[in-house]
Amino acid sequence: MSGDSGLLNLEEAATYLGVSKTSLRRWTNSGALECRRLGARAERRFERTMLDAFLFKQSGTRATSADAGFKEKLSGAAQDGRHKHVSLYFRDADQQWRSFRRYFLDHYHAGKPTTYLYSSSTRAELYDRIAAEGIDPEAAGRAGLLSLVPAKEAYLRQGVFSASFMISFMKLLLILRRSDGHLEHLVTGEMDWYFTETPGTEEIHLYEERLNTLLDQNPQVTIVCQYDITKFSGEDVFNSCRSHPIVQFDDQIRVGFFDPSVRLAP
Image (cartoon, rainbow, N blue to C red; front, side, top):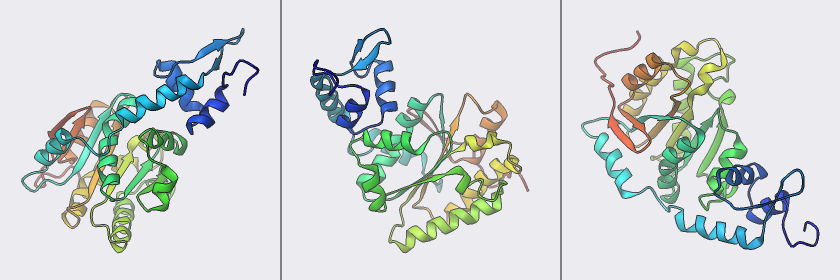
């Protein structure tokens, strides 16, 4: 413990809460977690009572499943043969998780697996987000309910992007989950790998369009594609809306513009 003050330093407080120091810095910077600042360097110090109060507050706001209103909106948008293939738009990392978390919580608490293909986030950041929901991410992984896959091992696995390869990758992923007894499965991908200048990324919308055909054979699967709307061009956002049956921005869930009779690409 730091000195004789009874205050915990950043590392000690992170251990006490079971999170990373990065999360503590983010929470204190945003004002979500109170701390004291000591010395010329204004180093963070924490009282145990502050940390306990924060834990209590978090436990009171954690959701055990997706809220009913969200489920109703999603189910309503997925009527008339439309698949749960969602283009989710966000402006920053907090909005990204706030919008996506309900998909994950709904599947996790129902005992259904999630595969998360990450690019802009790191594994540590996703672990922190999940831990803040009261879920042990490592235990979820061991239970087969969470799989984190970096973009370089999925979208960019061949050193190029290929819509055909990714459809085959997704088919295999769904086959493996079915073999484990899971017909219902959540797959989500952070789409900013598009900006890596990897050859073939121009096939991104062809890939998105072809996912709908894949879901014809796997209607119980939910696919959520996460787009940072501050990075993608207006044309890309429009084409994303055209290739998805459902679009979401924050809490707004709407029917997308996907029309199986109109193809974006040959």
